[in-house]
Image 1 (cartoon, one colour):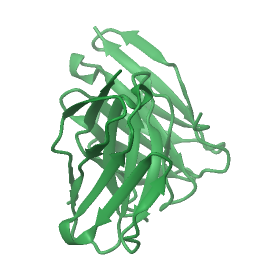
Image 2 (cartoon, helix red, strand yellow):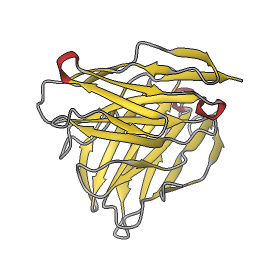
Image 3 (spheres, each protein chain N blue to C red):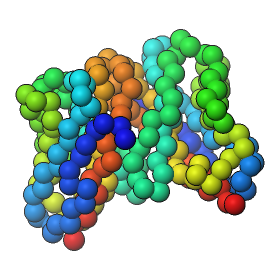
Length: 115
Length: 112
């Protein structure tokens, strides 16, 4: 069975600080996909990024960056120069693709960015 | 806007009742997934349909059922509702079986 752990339930930072959200996953499969979703106060789930298990390249998109390390089964998410609009709950998730494409979510990390 | 639509947005009902939640996937997507988000259980996968056929089942109660219609929209039926069924129900869609899932805005169900 798959498992995703987000140990940080809540993080509070002041605007312009950098913040890293941790995600650790467990799976015995060699092919899998990792995701981050954002859930703002309005409630919808917004897709941020998808990585497959064969692509360990880190990715940067504007102020967002992701660090995928298979050796430690981690897929961490960093927001640089955080803004109030980044306040949300962030979920890390894993799927196996194919017939096992359902997402297994972590418990989420609530990020509060204060002005 | 993800392109996935869900109706209704909010639903308030009483214990023992039955409700139907509706989802229209993004144009061209063949897979529809249903998830439940509750305070105690977090986000949990319920069921997946692919092009009208059930493809995978998760922690879905026997009181719950779903189907996907020929036009690819899906409905989740919840019956004999209990207080504990109060949750946010999300529908997601993807093009096939390995692509990214895009989520609808959710239906917030309150059982009184």
